[in-house]
Length: 434
Image (cartoon, rainbow, N blue to C red; front, side, top):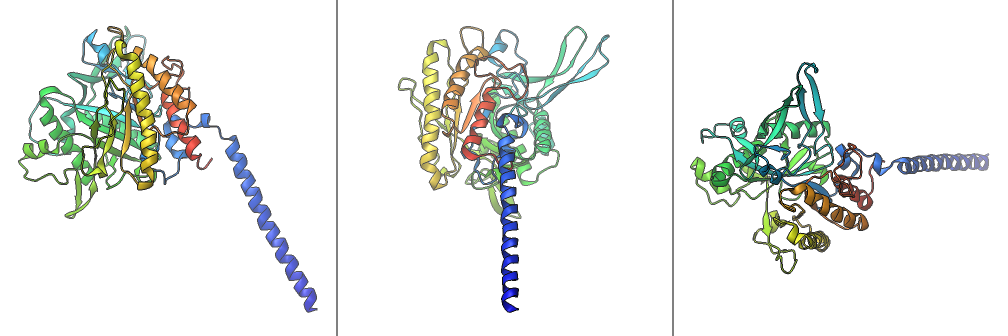
């Protein structure tokens, strides 16, 4: 009787184990089948970071960026404006009203750079005229507008029956509205803002207001603005999701002087809670210079505290005469980005690699678009042929230029430069939950 019971128990255990193994196999096969049926091309540009693991550091990801973001319309007068218009789309979804006899005041929307996969924005601030006194975060934000040199970025607010459009400034409130809406709708994403002043003689005052706004939002976040990442290291995707990550080269001393605050600036970008330092709200940029003659990319660091260093391939205002040199310079920047990160990754580096592929002119008055149509295919073709390399942030003009050198007219999902860039991450890191 005991032998029979023992045999029955063993048989039951074997059957149970077989059932478990079988269930696990079915589950594994189902997961494998699901992964096979998920095409990278089916992933939306709006939330591509959703498919990357939480533990990947932000400086390990290839990130498409926009040089001079928001410069779709400007206060410049043609033909000067061809030098300032560097984007086809605004930062976030732009909505305007069609008015007139043949239109019933309907709302028209066009998705922007963020919806097209861009996750790095080159933001240049100027100041709207008024009192220099800082009162609160709202006041600091209202005084700031987006600019390119002496020209102000504008957004369309209406268009009449005759096709005549009305425009308004793109101020900081508009920028924050775009960012807040996008991150709320796509909480898996993060956006890197590289903030600077670009308004001539007003730079010290501009930097004071820029510093004031971001410092206040980092220390005492307001719900109407996006949350800012605060920390002492480059965040992982898990830490950065739903937040802004700030880079800057602004001088915090301008804010201290403006506000009559004494201090030595040891922790200019520090955030304090209950009197205790908890981290910085911005990474300090370190500009490195490449030598045009040698076509090299500098990696020298001028910040003694390398903890917050950003290694940047400096923007070079190029024209058709130096076209081949510019590509060689960009090529070396992309190559050095991978070399540097592969070397430093094991040491937990806090450096970002950033390459600007933009330019200001191409053959007279044709502007950055023609230059982008020539250069971007070279960049994307190089990256497509070497998808497993590290490229860091690649800042471009006209981020919707395709691999053939034409501006995309088919909407989201096409083989545009921004999409080619972020798709390289899937090959290196795999697709999570797919």
